Amino acid sequence: MAEGAVLLRGLFRADEPEIISALRAIVAQAPFRRMVTPGGHTMSVAMTNCGSKGWVTDISGYRYDVNDPESGRPWPALPPSFLDLARRAAEQGGFADFVPDACLINRYVPGAKMSLHQDKDELDLGAPIVSVSLGLPAVFMFGGLARSEKAKRYRLEHGDIAVWGGPARLAYHGVAPLADGEHPLMGRQRINLTFRKVQ
Ligand code: MD3
Ligand code: FE
Image (cartoon, rainbow, N blue to C red):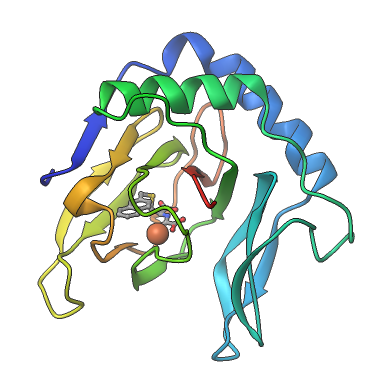
């Protein structure tokens, strides 16, 4: 894809049932919700988190928070199956000993999108981000270090895992509006897990 970005296919197969059941348990404790940006817009993507920190946004800004603001309780813990998959993916991408402390979980229904942005709310920018795509395919947009650089488009499908480190870590990226469809396992949605080392 780009320097520092590695796409892994097939790593996920053996873990699929465990990952999906762990995901269901997380969502039962911390349901998906559409958050508000500091600009006052409600995001089309619904989000939740697991791990010791979770990414949140509201009218006052973006931050990582130890508590789910909806419940006032800590986010659900990172399940061992999630940690193991993220660590193996990072290793294959050239990052040994990746121990994420946060997993942001994004849910796209048809029409939902994520505009071009950088992920820079994490303190340790030397650590990669590992992403796992589930459900309907999406068109992922990958630009450069300046917003003005023209983004290239890639299809991300169920089971695709990507490791974003090095020069790719601060690249602008986004997701085009999700096309309608029905995934045999996940239904009419796309879910993306992004593993991060926040602290
Ligand atoms: C490249 N999520 O959660 S995953 C995000 O599909 C986010 O939900 C998208 O962008 C999604 O912040 C894209 C792939 C991804 C994730 C993080 C990155 C690519 C990245 C960080 C830096 C560079
Ligand atoms: Fe991002």
